[in-house]
Image (spheres, rainbow, N blue to C red):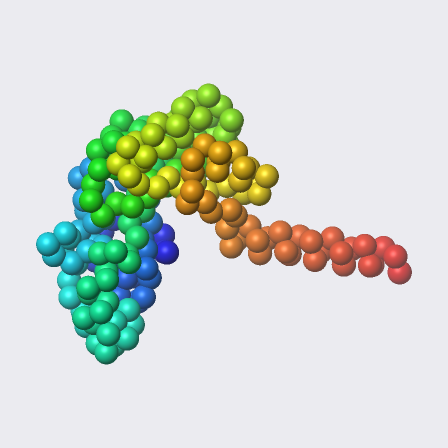
Length: 190
């Protein structure tokens, strides 16, 4: 799964052609924007993805037919719910065929709601519950990103099943911080 910077079909198609099996698009506010994502994800008649046979995803044309036949089932479409506007269109977004996951972007959504970083705030919890309900009603999954592994149980209990914890930048920064602290301890002991 790869997060792209926009729902532009050309960008989505390029990433899929490189072999990604899923695309996460930020700030999907309306069902029209969700359909734009699907247009880039899927070949006709579901979407408008262009056919490129000589790409990594199809093993450079050796596997195009198998890839094509399985692409509708095997390519994951993830719409990030990060704005007030998206909260107004949750059910419509969730019902777009080809969108598989409504993924809550907690930092952006809490910023948009005026409660940045307050992930236990009633407004944020309400937004989570509404997103989960819309996804469930449409038979889709709900996702979220969190940084504290202790939050796993809370989100799982709420019904969120597409769970991401941490980020590569955080892991690298934490590792560097731990290394610097250890070296400082060694130096102090000398």
